[in-house]
Length: 356
Image (cartoon, rainbow, N blue to C red):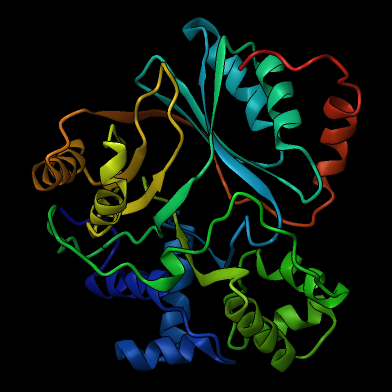
C-alpha cells in the first residue's frame, strides 16, 4: 500500500537520492534530467518529503572507523521497570547514534563511537555504571560484509531478491585504524558537509560560504573524502517509519566458525539486508552474524529472514524486534558537544571498571 502524499515520482526520487546523489554544482538539475523533471520541481519535491518527515537529511555519510573514531554495537541487560531511565542516560552520550529497546533478555541495544585517542572501554564503563545495567556486552565489528540502508520506496524488491554488494557498502575494517591526517580546511568541511544539504540551486556553493572556500573546493574535498574512503557516500538519510518501513528486525545467527567466510557474504547478498556483520560471541550470546532487515510490516522482515534460513541452512538464530526507538541520529564528527559530556562524566570517573 502506498503511503499518503507520496506519488510514484516521489518514490523514484527518494530511491535516487538514497542510491546515487550527484556530486556536482547543480545536483538537483542532474536529478531532474535523470527523472524527467524540471529542477524547481525536484527541489520542491525534496522539500515536501522533508516536511512530511520521510527524508531526514541529505549529507555526506562518513566512515566512523576510517576517521579514527572507535565504535561498537553494545547490548545491555536492564531491569525492565527502569529501562526508559537507563535509555535516557545512554542517549545523552554524544557518540550514541542509535538506541533501541528490543524483545530479548538483552533488552537495550545501542551504537557508540568515541573520538580518536579516547578509550571506548572507558566510555562504556561509565555508561554501564550510570545506566544501572546488570550486563553490558561490547559487540564490535570483526568483519563487515555490508553496510548500506536502501529502502526501496517502490516496493518491488522481493523478500529473497539478491543484489551485488557495492564497494562503498563493504568498507575496510581492521582492529585498529589510525586517524587520518586532516588539514584545518578538511576538518571544517567535514563539520559542514555532515549536516543537511541546503535545498537550493547550488547547494555546495552555500556550504562553501559556511566553510570559507569555493564551490569547486567543496566538490574536490568531497571527491577526495570518497577516494580516500573517509566518506562512504553522499546520500539521503530516511526516516524509516514515516517512509512506511515500520518494522525493524535484527536477525542474529549462530554460524559455525568454519562457515563464516562462506555464509557471511551470502547473507549480505540479500537485497533487503541493510547491514551484515561478524561480531564476537560470549557464553550468554552465541550469535556471530548480524543481519538488519527493514520492512513495511513484520511479515516482510520475517519473509527475508526465512529466505536467509532456507538458503543457508542455519537453524540456530533469533529474530530481535525494535519495540521502542529512543534515539536515532548520526554521529557528528569534530564537534564541541563532546567536551561537556567528557567533563561531567568521564573526567570525574576514576572508579574501577565494572565487570561487563
